[in-house]
Amino acid sequence: MFTLLAACAALMWFALLVLPWQPWRVREYLTALETPSACSFNDVTVLIPARDEAECIQHTLLALSAQGPLGGIVLVDDQSTDGTSEAAASLGIPGLEILSGSTPPPGWSGKLWALHQGLSRVTTEHVLLLDADIELAPGTLTALHQKMSQENLTLVSVMATLFMQNCWEKLLLPPFIYFFKLIYPFALANNPRSDVAAAAGGCILLKTRSIRNIGGFAALHDAIIDDCSLAKRIKAAGGRTWLGLSHDVRAVRPYGTLSNIWNMVARTAFTQLRYSKLLLALCTALLLISFAIPAVALFSGEQKTTICGACALLLMFTSYLPTVRFFRLSVLWALSLPFAACLFLAMTWTSALRYWSGERSRWKNRSYERVTTDQGP
Image (cartoon, rainbow, N blue to C red; front, side, top):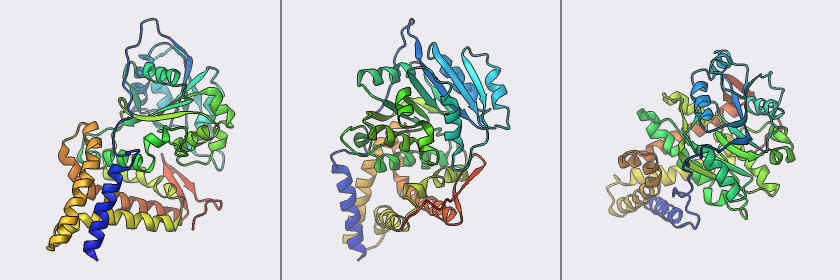
């Protein structure tokens, strides 16, 4: 039986590698372009929701102002207690408008309520949704703008390169991107004929009329995975979307500790499974067979089992290497994927246990209670 499970794991990894859309590869990426001196982005308003972001907001705004003249910057201070507004205002950036956000109504997530308040101030053709800890390298907005116009896109989104300095960040953040790409293959998400839809909420450029045509952020008000929900709505309305990676869109806030990363993943993990016990059980079995079984099989002492485990691990590492290389880490980090996967499984169970205890999600010192409309088998 153990040999059979190890053989199944090897077949699963082989199947992943030969899938036509190859979700493990890094083919969709955006590179900053040189901005002509006369270039202006008067058709773009940047909308930034910020809650307790005094540590990061100045980096974000200074990098943003270096992109070129903008149609405006709307910063919605979501009831910060650390002087976020003061830190932003002290820069004296032209065109920066700071709104004091109000308490989210019942059923709204804090970020979406902040975006809803800021959207009313947007009058330009395009709006750039930017997280308060995201730094754009010079020329990034040029690349985003060009990508949208040349390919007639409604929404262009970039998954930021996360801060990766210490061991926990290097161990867990590349797999976070890797697993996201397996769940939402970029090639399918970018294909207008596919039902798969995905976006990365840290950096999204979209046409203002498109978000208003779907009912604004009110249409997404209770979404925990708001970025993918937005892309799904835009795509369902006939819009074309694109999602990729970039070294030029960077998160400046370190996660630092295992606890911080754990809570970040647990915030949405069970939501990804639609709060379903059946999907949780299937996810658990799939992760154990594909990641844990091959590692254990390697030391089983049975020749056939060891060979199957070694084949599965080789195929697994092959699929993960492009992600490791993209983030410019040593290839030896590919060997850590089985351990990282087991930690992600534990984070998923944490998410489920919190949900069953009545907490739907937790983030930025806010807890969102489970609502009776959430259902799962």
